[in-house]
Each structure stands twice: as C-alpha cells, then as structure tokens.
Length: 86
Image (spheres, rainbow, N blue to C red):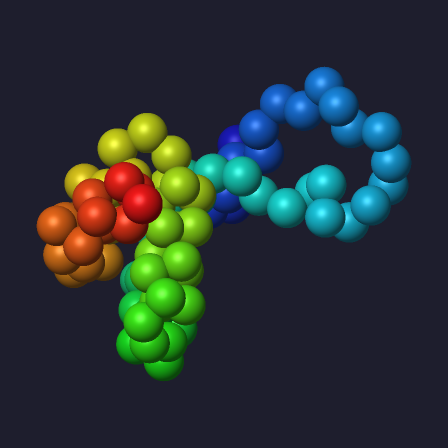
C-alpha cells in the first residue's frame, strides 16, 4: 500500500518523459508538515499571488477541496469561494 500523500491521476495523453507530466494532481493526505508548509507559503504571499496559490492548493485537494482547506488548513471559506468564482 502506497502511503504517499499524493495520488497520480490517470493520464491518457502522456506522450513524453517530461518531468512535469509526473507532478501529483491530487493531494490525498494533508500531513502536519504539509499543512505547516502550505500555511507558511500562503503567509509569505500577498494579494493576487496569495489568492492564486490558495486556488491552486484547493484544486489539488480535489473534490471537497474548499471544505478541506477550511477545516484542515484554517483558511477562510468565503475567500476560497471568491477565488474559485473569479
């Protein structure tokens, strides 16, 4: 059983050995270390860059990502919803 916090999504368009094709697409588990790291990065950013980062993390969390970000990372859901709409 793989205990990695990421899950590789099925890709049928995998045509090269580009390392970018192997990036994780879904964060399966938010470990305490990962939570601390994501919040550290978020706190370093301001304005548009911060909102873009939050949107990317929420999308990497997959289905229910907004709720997970609110509950597990302590992020404001109203901000997350705003980010997702824009």
